[in-house]
Image (cartoon, rainbow, N blue to C red; front, side, top):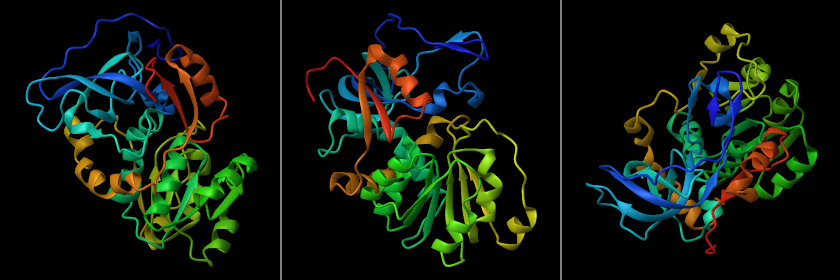
Length: 323
């Protein structure tokens, strides 16, 4: 993808096969997940006037290991953060790689690593979610939203979510959604207070942005936490109720990998493997894949994402005949 700072041009190119350096592994990519953030130029992931391989998470088979790799070997089926994932071959860092749970196929595995680690950051690392608490997800039918729903339910929480599609909300009831609110507007306060017996929600996952920020603050419980993970509405400024922040002892935090070092990104990986991977292995958390398309149809996949047709993740699949 090449950017002029405003627009992005996406084109398929031939590049040399990467060579793994120390602590890296060369992966034959079987499938890769789409993430909205890498296509939003406002997120600052791409410098103007530069070309960059895109794709951020993948599942595949290890074909070569660099020096110092001890936890994996050639032939292992793995998943993880993977810069340049929309390719036949890509590099993974050992510290950001996981063995694929046997319960997953390639497409499900590709839909999991980045999104699930982001959600783990929101719910557990920074969100300190406890069983029985209320989680509220704006845009619950997005990839991050569905992952937040399934992980929160597996951790014993109750979940409320918004979406502009009642059909999608109805579908998520099978995944444990306790209450779906069909709206794209900041008008959910009354419904949240009714559902929580006037207490408010304990943890907010805001995938929408500034247009719903003030209503989220208003809807929070005492000592509530709010995670900002995206701003698909393009609204980057919002009113702040400082009195509510003060009196209710609220915690507001951002969830982004933009400025984090590799060591910072991978710091939570041991806890994720210990707490979440067993829930995936036993089927308590199942990645939701909306649609799988071949790598050559990236633009079609992006169009599906841009028009919010999907429920869950969109995945690009390689040419492997193996499922």
